[in-house]
Picture (tube, rainbow, N blue to C red):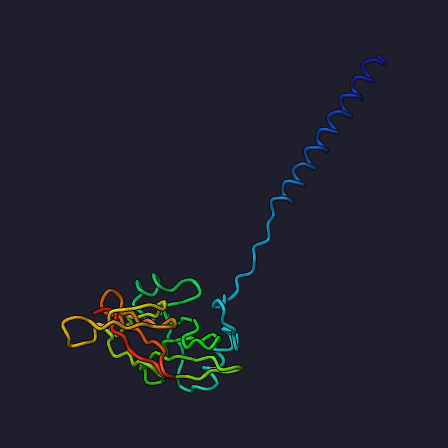
Length: 203
């Protein structure tokens, strides 16, 4: 009888220890597999200081450009909006150092109070921005925007806006604002001699 009692006691202790070890292992696995996701922040242009954050540029537009605002998603042809609206550059906004002064600049597609659209450049100047209206958007098939913004890298490009047989070669020293009419035409605005110049990059 005593032997049976001792045997039952030993089995009970073994089962208790086994259950305790399994529980501890499960808890450690749960804890170790939990990984914190990094915060997603607005990335900066390499080698370019920012006079203000993306929130500040939005506030600058709201404060200094009455009547102008970012168009809503419904203003765009849905297919193009969904396809191009991603990453740090979006269908309506791009950022880079367009004039090479070491400050972050922006380009936006904005709409005014009469539903007219234009591309604006906001050139970073120390603690503020200098806005420049560079292109009015008048092509609106089905009353929807079929246009978006991109950044054209510095380089040498064919300018198709010429009457000559061969296109002119244009060299850009800084990133350019690329205005793209999806699958139709494209034009770029590059900085030279303190102003923007046009290159027709697609037709």
